[in-house]
Image 1 (cartoon, rainbow over the protein chains, first blue to last red):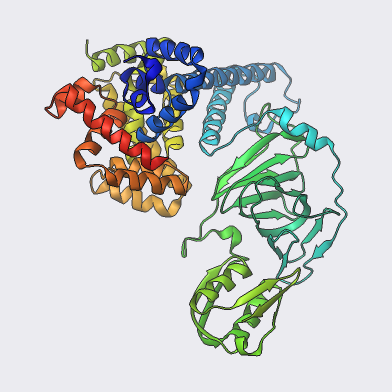
Image 2: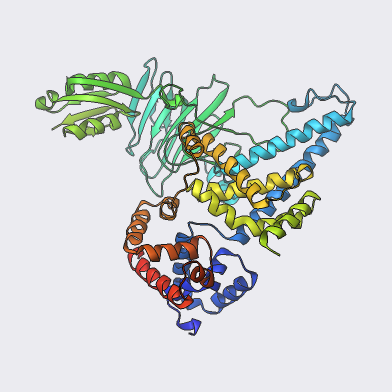
Length: 384
Length: 183
């Protein structure tokens, strides 16, 4: 049959086409690349066929693409190794008194052999951590995409929310996102904070459960970091007095970048945290990544992340009225809960709940016996 | 020369620092390793990254590599160890379960489980599940051999003792059925 008359099924069932999709045979790649170029009208059918082939092979990928990644990896690895060897040689030629990067301080400056070996080992560790970084889902995006945005000055002089001495304070932002602030934490919203412009400055620690809006990212500026939310729930620890700024992610995706390098974005995936030292050492090793990534610390007893132990509420209820439960929630999350209806107050509930936000807790309760609630800025109103 | 005999040659080249030999070994083993990895974890990105990382490590320590008589088996073992370590790193709670599973003997994910769990989109997962349910066991088996294991029609026909034409027709009808549901 003439390829011109192929249906999508015919493409999928063609062995040569399958090898083209996998990138496993040079002649097939050549043939199909040319054919596709010469038959632009078939492109929709071709892409549907490629999609189904990929579904059925469980995204095994394209050999050529993967091989190029390996080649790139080897080039980067060798460049790094060379750069560090070079630094090591320079360091060894300098006098003992010159300031040296901390990582080779113990190296013996007069004896080249052991020092170089130490550096090499260091190079390998860096390479290993770079790889880990790839695995953890980091992408350094192209500079041009973000620099323009960084240039536009953001006006962050809007509403200020303070938790003061309260252990926790919960507010609902105008876009519907829920923020729980830990004690002595301040949040300043952009003066025109709304659905389309969701930027705020954080000093202290807060847990965010962000409502998803496809085209409007939610951005938190904390210390030297800009955290752009692509998904949902995360915790930021950014007390100015702490040594580190930590961003821990629990659901969805966030992209983190430094103020002075808005072009270098790191994408965090769930249960990972990013740590940035607030004080940068005077001498920094060349090419070192400013961020450190760790998986979130898990409590050995309850297997829950320690980073949000401060906000997670375990609520044990044994046949209690909703008004009593609301009192407990109000005290824990630091948000006023009122009732628009007397009868709802007497609804009774039993069970154990665990949740990070007051809304999640109410939603869990509502499952066993329904009621409604409305969230305003700093009040929740429960009704029938 | 069989593929494994080639692999041994490439391995020897790699030990001597021949970068091209490393790439040839990669070409020869990539799909075997990815398929093997997917049966351990249905996270295709993790598996593909791990395969690349495995070869980067081989290159890094090529001068210290020993002679190996079963190259593919050696690579499988290394990949498995790397994947289990990474899974443990990503979720400490699951790690114990995963390791236990592997102590009790290798429990592999089934083909259907893999192709569904690899997808992140909930709707697509459901469609794919529904589509696979429509296929007969025979159709599923042939689809697996051809698309997942990467066999040719000739090899599929040999393995299932039927003619190439029958194998082709079975797969063609299965694809037709899948496509209507996936649309």
